[in-house]
Amino acid sequence: MVKFRSAKELAEYRKELVSSRPKDEKVVAICAGTGCKAYGANKVVAAFREEVKKQGLEGKVRVRATGCHGFCERGTLVVIHPEGVLYQRVKPEAVAEIVEKTVKGGEILEKHLYVEPVTNAKYRKEHEIPFYKHQQRLILGMNGHIDPSSIDDYIALGGYEALAKALEMGPDAVMEQVKKANVRGRGGGGFPAGRKWETCKNAKSDKRYVICNADEGDPGAFMDRSVLEGNPHSVLEGMIIGALAIGSDEGFIYVRHEYPLAVERLGLALQQAREMGLLGEGILGSALKFDIKINKGGGAFVCGESTALMASIEGRVGEPRAKHIHTVVQGLYNKPSNLNNVAR
Image 1 (spheres, rainbow, N blue to C red):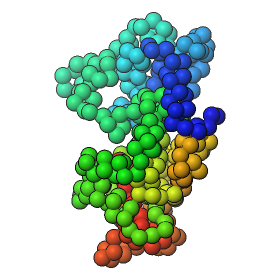
Image 2 (image 1 turned 90 degrees about the vertical axis):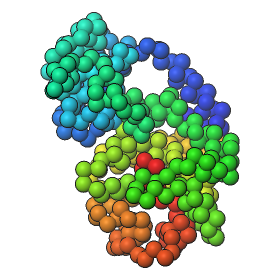
Image 3 (image 1 turned 30 degrees about the vertical axis):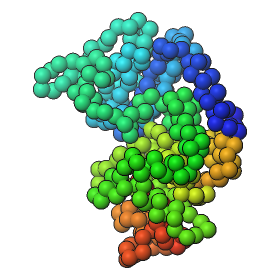
């Protein structure tokens, strides 16, 4: 695996990746997030890979196991690119016909199309389906286009480009840009991220932490898990940029142990980023030093609260403390700590 010594090397690598992939590359993107895995997505992925090989399409058709596509009730979801045809509730036994007739022949198999329950209208393209049509997918927008186990997929779509730009800008300019953008927290308070980051940066200390809150204890709220499962490098890149801005060399991702797939994909992403010089000493040949550890929580709802979360990372009982001292000044191990949610 290549190790980047500069932003220029990263840009050249991205250019080679993009040029090596045909513009109209045929891709079968299969949702392999937790929801579709419950419907048997792993077997569908295996069936597609076997069938592509059997029908002599290796090197011509890419089978990509992706993160969550969002339309969980219709899993397993399969999207055929570049046409954008979506088949829903796909079973392994249907794969041979899909490869033969749709992937190879371009024929639409109507029995696999989504049927709108009120109007009985059938939809061929993913973007035409009412569920997707009125969405502007940002946080989960890349999920259907990358294999979360492949750092190359992320880089090919512009991954770590923002980090390279941030390193070129420098910490002060990055901080000003965050403040100017008026990025806010997605909790009830909607606190401005720029103010939080700046307070943490200005706190007197020889050590600062960047922490990602992936505990997500609210019942039925699985957005954070879906980002970690489907696009883990986007979270890492955001944390590295945050570390640059506030002057941190160590970070933590606090994720609940009930999300084993998210933990697995995060662990792989961390390994890949370290091997390619995007984490650790001298990131992209710069003076920036930063690394991230995963901390698995025990599933306590209260550990979604900032001070309880930090107590848990320290190995103590996850109990909230009084808020008269903010965590940006005195947080993890009594050091200034910049805590943001996954989707910040």
